[in-house]
Amino acid sequence: MKNKYLEAGKIINTHGVNGDVTAESYCNTPKQLSLLKNLYIRTKEGNYLRLDVKKSAVFKNRVILGFEGFGSLEEAVRLKNSIIYADREDIPIGANEHFIADIIGLPVYDSDTGECYGVVSDVVNYGAGDIYEVTKDDGKKAYVPVVPQFVRKVDTEAGVYISVIEGLL
Image (cartoon, rainbow, N blue to C red; front, side):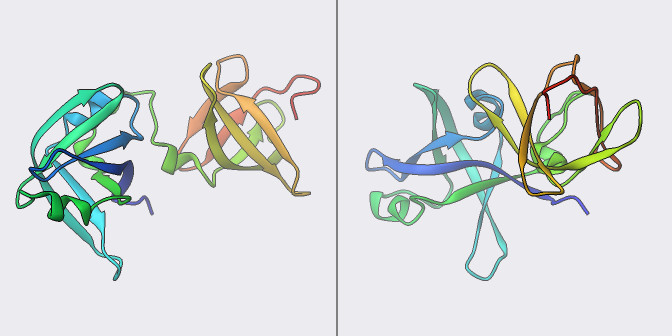
């Protein structure tokens, strides 16, 4: 079952005295986060509380957000360090794109032999592109660059299919 709400960013600080906050974006770009009209925070009880975005702007790779009902610095301080979520249905996604949350936990198979190498335990990006962290059955980690030469197919229901060269795993 895919999560309805996906991590979209983190509120890292307040911005000014009128209830605005500064957020770090977990989306592909800060602009993508700034275009969302509704965001959510998780309560201590595990429920999602909707925040209606009244204004947003990208500034220095961060997103400045103003929410309905938050008009003072004191109110904004309560949001500091909160993870913000987006409803997956509010995020446009291309035909060959996938949410990271849907990839983590998928089995990783050899596209030719069907052999299972382990599961995707994380997706990292050090600047040159995404890399799948694969935890093998013995607990060791392997890293697979997400490029067509290695990743042949991603099926969020069945698994990730890769082409292996010597030394990759």
